[in-house]
Image: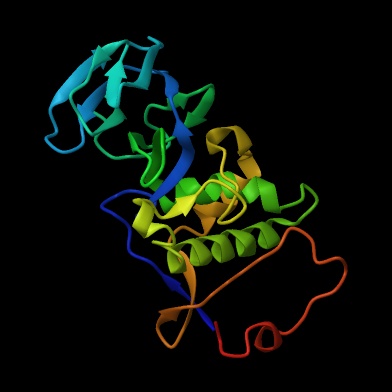
Length: 231
C-alpha cells in the first residue's frame, strides 16, 4: 500500500462529491452569509437573486416546486453563492434549515418517493473536514489526525457513486457517513486535511478500500479475515 496524490477539480479541494443532506422534505428555509442566487438546474436560468442573510422558503405544492409561494416552473434548482467562481468552503456558506453547508445545494424531487431531496455538492476535502470531528479524539497527536484524513479521503473517493441511482454519491446518515455540514469542524481537523491535501492510499495504482470505525471495543482483526475476497 502506498500514498499517492489525487487530481483536484481545477483549483478546488479535490474532486466534487454529492451528499444528500435532507430527503423526503416538503419545505426548506434557506439563507446565506453573502449574496446568493437560485438557478434552474437544467437550463442554468437564474430564478431569483437574494441579498446577504435574506431568508426564503423552497417547497412543494400540488406537485410543483415553489419559491416563497411562487411556482418555480422547474424540476430542480440550485442554490449557490452569487458569482461564486470556485466552490470552496472559504466562499459563501449556504444555510439550509439552520445548518450551514459549503459549496452549492441542489433541490429536486426525491426519486421514487414523495417530497424533495437536498443535495450538497462540494469538494471532497470539504466533505472530509466535517467527517473528521466525528471520528477523532482531541487527544490524538497531529500525525494520527493526518492518517485519519487520508483514510477518510481514500474511502470517500473509492465509494463515489454509492447512491448513484438516486442521483447522489452519499447519503448523510451512518449508512455512508454521518454528515452535518460545517457545524462539526475544528481547526486541528482542518489543518490535518490541508496538510495531507490530495493524498490517498493506493495498491498497484488503484485506490484501496480503507474502512474505519468509531470504536473497536478494544479488538481489531486482519482485513483478509473480514473481507476474504478482498471486498
